[in-house]
Length: 203
Ligand SMILES: Nc1ncnc2c1ncn2[C@@H]1O[C@H](COP(=O)(O)OP(=O)(O)OP(=O)(O)O)[C@@H](O)[C@H]1O
Ligand SMILES: Nc1nc2c(ncn2[C@@H]2O[C@H](COP(=O)(O)O)[C@@H](O)[C@H]2O)c(=O)[nH]1
Image (cartoon, rainbow, N blue to C red; front, side):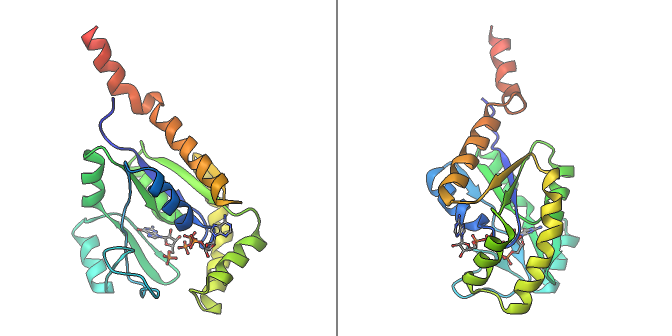
């Protein structure tokens, strides 16, 4: 069997429910880990550095880019976000599946650098519901919500670059689909090639 874990890239507009669906997925799948991103945005109430994000200054973030320590990075809503390279490499090496919850520009960088990754786009059932979720979450001010919703249009247009689209109408539905996609990918020839070759060598 392929001992290396699967790299799963998950994107979708802000407020669609990526984090919510992922929390349930991770509870059900002990062999999967969420990559902890770095960001220059301010922590929200309750967010802890090293748990939800690594909260960095602009200077610290730029230094990590210079030292090639980011697997991908992008600017979103005036702040920098990026995936620290080393922990992702280590977890994949250890056979764990690694999930990157990242926006579309970063996802396209991963598509270039990690062609074996699987790309999943989470869609809202409709734009009214996306707005409602973002407003009801009460973590952003009105202007930030406006900017995030404005950006959601170009993000949704990028969904066609992904391998799969999952509609987050209910958390249970989205979770079931996410599980099924990852399960199918782990049985794909792309992922199983090494195992098939090993069996043939033994035969
Ligand atoms: N299927 C669902 N039905 C109803 N509400 C949902 C559903 N999924 C998530 N939510 C709610 O929508 C809000 C946004 O969810 P969440 O914070 O997970 O979004 P996100 O995509 O991770 O956002 P961001 O990218 O801004 O971090 C939360 O209040 C969450 O409880
Ligand atoms: N390119 C990257 N995008 C990231 C990363 N970590 C998170 N994100 C995305 O940023 C927006 C905003 O996140 P928020 O926590 O401020 O609401 C959202 O789309 C995230 O998916 C990353 O490492 N790289």
